[in-house]
Image 1 (tube, rainbow over the protein chains, first blue to last red):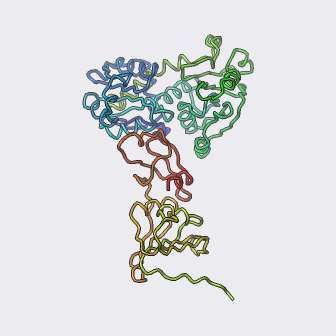
Image 2: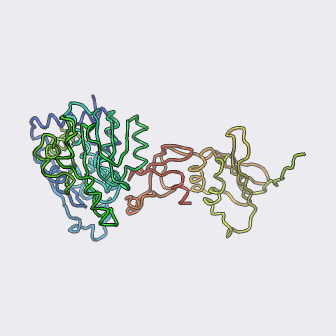
Image 3: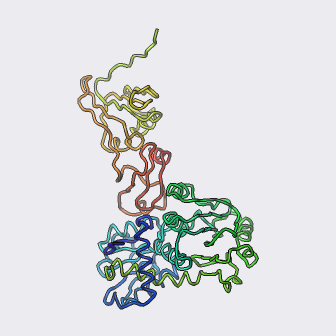
Length: 303
Length: 153
């Protein structure tokens, strides 16, 4: 695969085809096996308008492992944005100081706008409920590492309506001919337009309110947020019904892996952590090599 | 014996022909032709048999030529419409509306959390389907179907 990533923005998983995604995953694997200070002397700008633990830290670690440095903020209250500066102007300023920009923002489309404003590569680290492409890449990386392929049976469970990671993951899985089961509480189903897209791509998709664990090779669990429910009692019921315990694993395939973008809030009982199925902390560790590959590719440090 | 209703030719104005069947009233909405509209002759024909497209709508407006953004909006709901400019009872100009693959400006994104509502920038959409229209915002990636588009007019 010949893919030119130099100078390219990483905004949405929709911008990439199957070959390009596989290429990034191959490079991430190389990064895991060892790396030179490919980005020595380069500076990454981290613009986190919204809080984040894993994404921000793993980008920072990825850049530093490649010998580069980072600047930025994780609280926009301390910046000129509070004076009313536009996002475009903020980006043009940061662009003047840095070689790559990573942005997380609460508004959908913010990263695309930033990419239009900047001549330097921009990487989307989450734009509201829309996209989070490096999360999708590390999810795919983890699945491929476990199974050696991506056309597996995947169950996505939890808040499929608002969870941005599941939208882009489902889209990417459809590209790779995975079988996709969507399990969510009533009212938090995958948006119809996403399902239409998946089916148009030829994916086998099924929708349910109840988990049948026996089929799944990958069970991808997401957090159900309390604030989505007007009635606390309703929330308590749903939370209980979608909580994964040792008991819920008794019909699971022996090769089942459980993933979660984290943070988890009781969706997966901690007793599961010690089982061979639990792969969410491997998944979080995979964020570093995947982001190293992305940073090295968009700067042209590797090809 | 056929009972035809004779519609008088307009003298000066615009005939919008080949409007997708059922969309004539939305064309009037786009043009701001409501009951408050200054007195002028407006003729609306709906579901008229058409050899090209089966059925079509037609709107004739006396004394009005369309602006570019109005034509742009009409193309969203009727990509095959033609605009005929009439002067002295004759057609002086006839053109098709054009619906480009990427639409800039013209309408706003239906997603209230889209960045285009908060920054000084044009909206931008990719046309994913033409008739009925389906647009995808190039910023927030949300889809707008025909109903969401028409709601803005």
